[in-house]
Amino acid sequence: MSETSSRPLGVAMIGYAFMGRAHSQAWRTVAAAFEVPAVARRVIVGRDETAVAEAARRLDWEEHATDWRAVLERDDIDIVDICTPGFLHAEIAIAALEAGKHVLCEKPLANDTAEAEAMVRAAEAATARGQIAALGFTYRRVPALALARQFVEAGKLGTIRQAKAAYLQDWLVDEEAPMNWRLRKETAGSGALGDIASHAIDQVQHLTGQRATSVRGRLATMVPQRPGADGPEPVTVDDAAWATLELDGGAIASVEVSRLATGAKNRLTVELFGTRGALRFDLENPNELWFLDATLPVAEQGFTRVLVTEPEHPYLEAWWPQGHVLGWENAFTHQARDLLLAIDGSAGFSPDFADGLALQRVLDAIIESDAADGASIAL
Ligand code: SOE
Image (cartoon, rainbow, N blue to C red; front, side, top):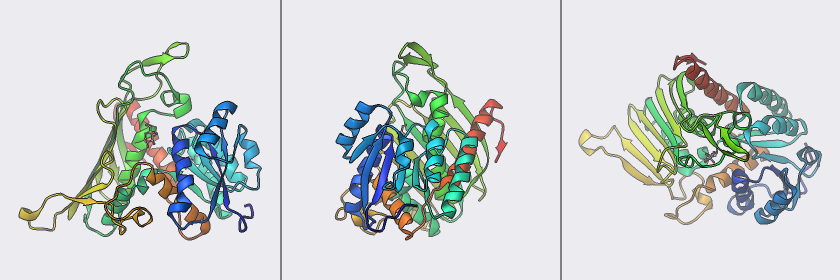
């Protein structure tokens, strides 16, 4: 690892589209909001020289580059933040870890289980050298969802018997919406499954503290072709996915995701049902957590809205006085904070690459189940 004691940690970010913008915002704000080691936004990397130069200017990076391999050789780069399409994750992450860098990789970890396994092997060697290999399931760092985890850990739900997670979006409802990398198997691995069921399944496993032991799944591609650069092009991934998961703590979870859910903008919902209580969350109202205390007399029970804006709530001490709401992007700043604290040795970072591999196995099992007409696949 490079010597950093006398200078800020240098970040290189690969990719500059939607996720690159969100991560840039996080790197810009993290040290102003939280007590963390100083960071420098050294270099943003992309293939198109003109576009990445413009991104560097707009997103406020010191430099831009088109060759990520050359960037990995630099001594002033300590953290490599991977915001590329999924098919590039494995190659870049493995090379960055081998170059001695800490890595933050966007979800899902890889496009399939074989790639994820290779990444975990590289991460195991790197973590033995003191590096961090972090995975960006950013919603874990939405304060209301972090609070939900605290409620479960404190036993407020008792034994969780049932979970229900859905992630519904509508950005592909229009059949004329053009092809992009998220709609091609070779670049995205899968469709709604890897893109957004990965979030839903991560939430189910993280919040319940239970891991899937078997799954049944179905996939559907509702719009089989879309306008490409040279005319109609086949969509080679799923538009929507459904799964039931048996969890090792005895709970059963259902997961439903779609990018053709008319009217659903970016609606990640999670519901947990336990012997002592229940919780529900909706990303379209991200500052609210709804809790029902089932230990109260039945006549007094009902869902209570916890407005997650108090300094006592996770991550909120760094922001505004109580009652002042946060948005979608703040979770990326919280993720950058937690990564910097992990690099500093003050805390661990979760999820890591091994968690990403475990999740990838669930996604691949859903694909296998769909191919086997919804049969149960053991993990
Ligand atoms: C697109 O569906 C997408 O940007 C996902 O890739 C992100 O992970 C999610 O946060 C929002 O939707």
